[in-house]
Length: 236
Image (cartoon, rainbow, N blue to C red; front, side, top):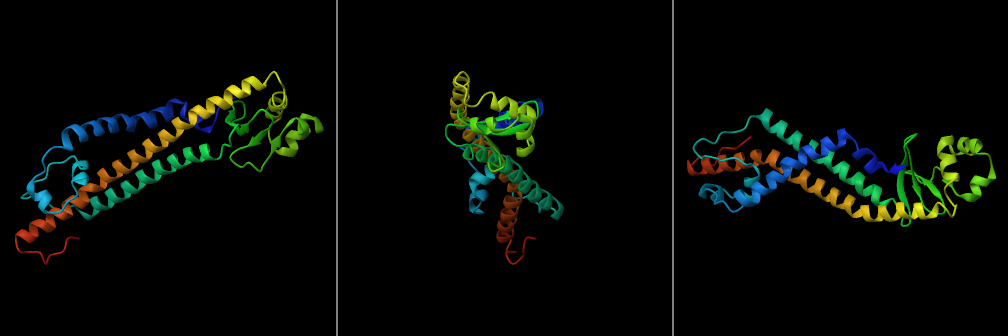
């Protein structure tokens, strides 16, 4: 067995790469933002144009009112779509992490059987399918009702999993091991929630930084036209 779904997937080179790759530059961006950007004076024309300073800093660009140009429709489209994709991908991953935490009842741990990749919830008294908890349940009474092969066929799960669970659940000598797994999972819940929060924060900030130039350039162009007496022109 291994700690489920979450650690079972994250504990692989690919997932570590996918998670660490954005987190490293994100941490650097946060440091840069707070220590070099946040307290740096903005040009007066940025303030006068009514631009949100937080969003302006996230662009990580220096703008010149004289050189400001309108972004092409293609670039705007790419930035908007990219921003939505970032929010969707990281949002779903954060929701999935929280779903694993919320759907795991107290006194259970969330595991995956390495041999077959089947996920389940385990306590000292029974085991339940996961994420669909209605698919099957195993406890000592059920395990003693029939042959393991027949139970596996009825429950539509592997014989290996049935054998492992039916020789584990309800046995006094196995209870301390299960208790350790349950307690470890309780401690890991906070890590899961923190990870979900960090992913959500990263997704929001990163998506804002991607789409921010669209907002900033539009506001600056409107302000520039206003100064030139061309306020009747519309920015497309």
